[in-house]
Image (cartoon, rainbow, N blue to C red; front, side, top):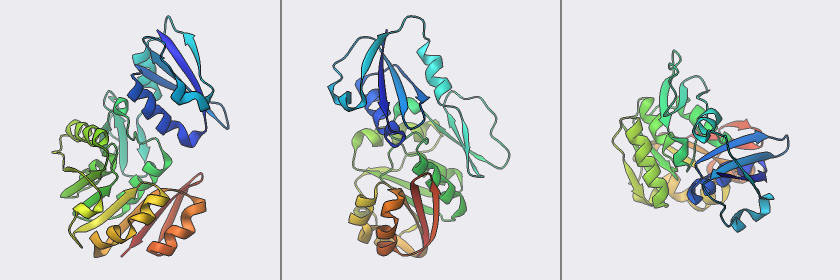
Length: 258
């Protein structure tokens, strides 16, 4: 067994981890180094790691590490806000009182709930009410699943990436929900059909599909927009309007009533 060691900024950890799972790692652990994070990924054999060259890669031999245990220890269950309990599939902790349980498999990648923007969107979902939720750029499907746990009658999960949709389907099944997923973006949805529209993407993409996001949201419905840093907040507000802004570190989430 060999381990690939990478050093990257905190905001790139989720994307790098996704690439490592795609490359075939059998387990990942993270070590906080202050301004950076060291990602250690186990592989059965040494691979060409040119795609990770910007992260100062080096290989070490691993002999005794139980990577299943390491991976599970690296993904503890967590409460997000006051109503969401985000639990890896192997976690046996009881769901805290007042919370709904959202099960996910971190090994599937495509969004694990660890990124601040995912947590911001989950917190906003907990405060908004609506029967029909559309999650644009769903990734792992966590936000759509959380919406169903919180009482939505329908949560449509949209993504352009087929691998992400496969991950979303598996996470829906882990939570005993039938998956409502589609390849595409907001143009797949009828006008004024969503009580809540969630977009955890990026500032650039949110701005590029703003007309479609606004079109599908019902009058009086909610927009939950995140995936962008503080430096892009003014542009997002200029396009969509003002609302409640929440933050974790440099990341922002804008929640507004239409």
